[in-house]
Image (tube, rainbow, N blue to C red; front, side, top):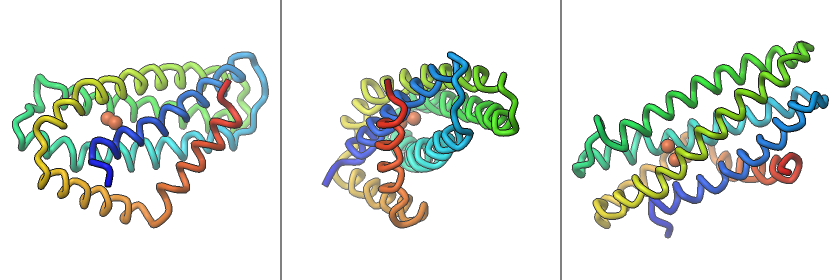
Length: 184
Ligand SMILES: [Fe+2]
Ligand SMILES: [Fe+2]
């Protein structure tokens, strides 16, 4: 049974695959190539549901509060920084949605705009994931005892169930398809 930190790290690897694919899509848009609006939508669907609701949801609702209880401060520490970056990410996703809508309505200039915001999102999330993997999750491994880990595992399973049976697996397959189609 993987530990809570191992589960979250595995999700990071899935998200990174989609970020590589998003870089490939952005490259095409920057060159002025035409791509289907549905491609933009499938990235946004993954980011909203898997990266944000599923993954950031587990961190914000379960891992971070548990770490605070175990003595890692929120304010002035890594948890506060991670929460702030999740919010910055949501702001960029809202901008990506607006650009994707405009692109879908035939506004060609919205393609490079989407790519520009996507590049910021890729940069933000790539370094965010590195910080979690190398700093916060290392701290978590030191402060979480076996009982707390078991509680978190159950909470993660519950979060998956609330998202809908098979949703996680569906988005793992989506990540593979996006990577095969778009990563360069
Ligand atoms: Fe995070
Ligand atoms: Fe994360």
